View 1: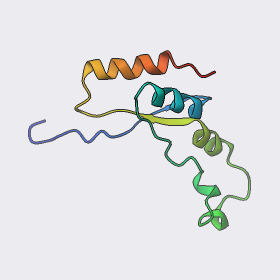
View 2 (view 1 turned 30 degrees about the horizontal axis):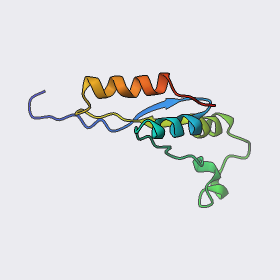
View 3 (view 1 turned 90 degrees about the vertical axis):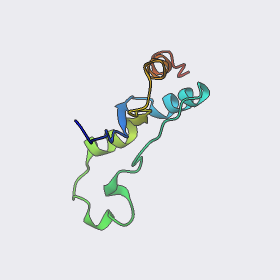
View 4 (view 1 turned 30 degrees about the vertical axis):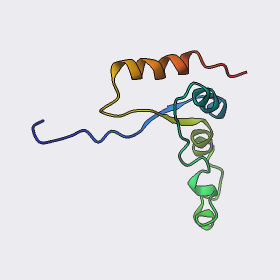
Length: 92
């Protein structure tokens, strides 16, 4: 669209070994970030408002998510490098 710029900023994936994948990406020189690794219902300020029961889906999402590089200025070669690093990650 004319006069508009993309505002993409997060590309979040899930992996059963998110922490190990983040470490592997760091070794490859690729940044990543875990947002809300502590689920909202487990944070001290929100604990009084948490649902009476467990929230297993929320716990699982918090444990397995990882944001990898994404940007409107990320070139094809850079995107390919990120994909290759995720694919080839040595998770021990």
